[in-house]
Length: 364
Image 1: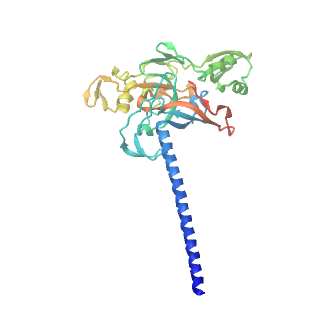
Image 2: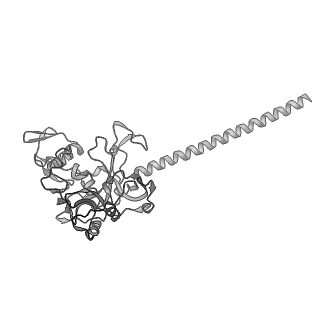
Image 3: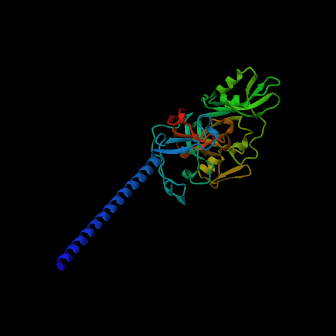
């Protein structure tokens, strides 16, 4: 009898052990499945982020009204062609191994950067490997070979007045009748931003041309004109941007050719501010002036052949955008992708989503 009881206990213990082993195997199998799924998702996300699309958030008002602070964008890397990895880093972070630069190439896209495209690019004058530089977003107003100029705040491309996208904002001076105050609320409701007084009976307002036309019709308004800095107003003297050191302010820019691959330029003291970053920073040459003579990589030379194409970028909020008017051209190898769609938008002032902007495609 005792042997029979012992045998039953042993059988129960064996069954219990088998169940425990089965449960452990099931747990291991479940964990492996989840780990495989997470690993697959991470690899897929990394491939999509590197070669297809990437999310981007608008942090500043430099592109308003086209893009608003708090817009979240999908940026297409396949449009202009994705770049293979440039640095060795931690995926999904800005952490990279200093001093390790990978050989890279750009996989062909289905289009080139076109004039008026809204482009995400690496901020050229950052001190970091190209892909580790801060992402900026602006409108491309000049492609390689274009001749640009700005006269009284108006942009000219190849001698013709550039088309104005509907969201482009500029500062205007609004003059009202005597003893009349311009209402900030009324201006805001019309779509503009009252910046302050501009002298007796005058106000400075940031707005689009269509809003300016609306305000021009108000009975209390006598005149609406662009607020243009005088030619000799020195805006750039205290800045450290080499490109802007040869100009007075962002409302006036003498004709300048956007550099293109193969272009031969004669370098002088007078135009060095235009090409300095190209020669030294972006195309990695040693250059120094000895008196009036320029030495490039130790050899005396006054001509230089441009090695890649460049772009001229400007923010749509023209008087609140630090762009190519300040720091110069964007090299082709700094281009990240084309802004494609707003997938979410957050209004930080009201703490509410902007539902009307969600899933809106971005039109140039």
